[in-house]
Every structure is written in C-alpha cells, then in structure tokens.
Amino acid sequence: MLASDRDNGDMPMPRNDSLVTYPGGALSGRSVVLLTVTRDDQILVLTESTPCHPVDPRWPDQGPDLGTLAAGEASAPLIDCVIGASDGSALFVGDEVPVRRGEPGWAFVVVHVLAAGGLIPVEGDEVLLTVDAAHRAALSAGHTGCHLAAVALNAALTARWRKPVRTDGLGHPDFDQLAIVSSTIVPDGAVDTYRLGRSLRKKGFDVDGLAVSLPEIAADANHRLAGWVASGACIDLTVGGPRLTDLREWVCVLPEGTQRIPCGGTHLRSLAEVTAVDVELVIDEAIGELVMTTRVRR
Image 1 (cartoon, one colour):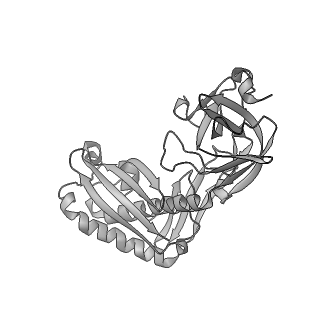
Image 2: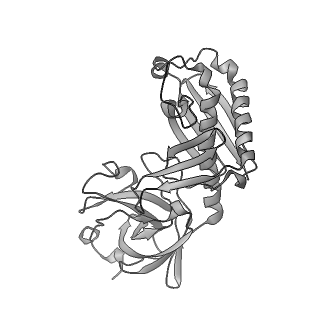
Image 3: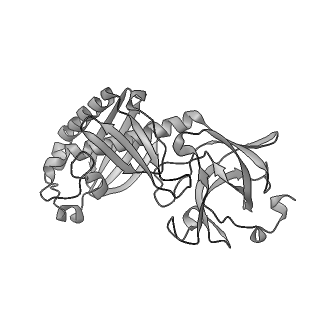
C-alpha cells in the first residue's frame, strides 16, 4: 500500500535516533525505510541510517545536503533534509520540535524531504541515498573556514579585553563564543554576526574605537589565517558515537595549539585542501553588531 493511501497517524514512530555517516565523510549509503509520511506537497522519509547532513532548526548554520533518494529503478531529488523528533506518538519536523536534542523518551531523526507526485518509498524498502559531492565539499570548506576565522578573530581582539573570560584552545579570550548571534555557512564561505551590546561590555570587552580599528584587526586575523593555511594543519571531526545526537567536535591542530569546537556539521580534513582563507569585518552601527564575512579559496 502506498504511504499516501494510509493514515499517517497509524504509522509506527521511530524509537531510536538516526544513525549518521556524514561525520566520517560518507557521500552515499543504503538503508531501510522506517517511516514515510505524506504532508501537504511533500513526502517525508525516515531511514535507519543516512549519509545526508540535515539542517538543525535550533542552530541552522549549515544548510542541508543536496542529493537523491533511489528505490529500485526509481529516484527522486532531495528538496530538503532536516532534523525531526518523535515521542513515539507523533513526528515533529524542523521548527515544530518542542524539545532539545537528547531529551529522554524522544528519538531524533534525519527527515529526507521529497516533492509529492513522484517517488513514495514504503516502509521496509531498501533505498540508496546519494549526496551531491560538489555541494558537500563547498559547504565543508565554508564551515571549516568559519571555525578557523573565529579563532583568528579571537586572537586579533585579545587586547580589547579588560577582564578575564573563558578562553579558546589557543589561550585567547573566546570572543566568538561570548558574542555570537548567528552564523550562516555558504558554499566556500560564511557570515557570522556578533553582538556588541551592554552584556559584552560588562564582561570586559572594550568597544571604544572598534570601528576605526577594524582594518587593523582584519589584517591581523588575515595574517594569522595565511600562516595557518600555509601550515597545512590537520583537521579531525571526533565523534562520540554513530547516532545523530552523539557529541561531535571539530579539532584543528594549529601551530600555536589545538582548537576544539563542538560541531554537528561537515568539514575538510586538512588546510592543505585550501589555498587561502580571509575575512572582512564591518560594523552595523544601527544595531550594534560586528559582521565577519569569511571567504575560502580551494
């Protein structure tokens, strides 16, 4: 029976978190369909395991993988891939998810989204999931550049701290984690926004004259980035387990030390894969935010 002919409310909901293989760099994989739900003009497909990176609605910095889902001779493009969750009675997708990851009694899953009117996989089918390798590589480069730029910015802003605060892996005040508002990963780049308001000032950050000093600060960060790229530093993504909710960390061994950042995204494996990483800094005076645009050249 086709999923569209069935009462979605009667379908068995997942009890375990999805198994994910994208942290290890997988670009394809076969798996069994656990659930198919027809919703409006979309088909939502859950599989036991997946190589597809989903967007996280709580911190949507890296967008979803592109690719295809194939069953037998038929295939369909993935139009989205997003994190969902189930309490055993209903499936919540994206912004609908009412709890944080790891909530007891909830299964967190990767939801593959297909357009209605085409392929509708059935529970128990074996399907082949294939990721667009070029798109994945571009986002991985952008995400790696984003983290690297954040560490360089921390170092370039060190002299502006008047009080002791938490530090990053290189021993510099962690401006990135203390001030970050949003982060958007784009192919071969990223845009990060930092709040410069009263809370940051109370922590000891000096914003006086910051706008005038931005060219010097950017030059400092870019000088560090050039040295790190030249070092060809190794990058690893350590994983606490195979499931979607298991802790993962981006680890980069730089000449000055090792930086670790909790991260659920995808990354390059070495800075030898890029020829340059550089940043541009601007201040939006109207809302009191610093915007860092990162570009990665491969």
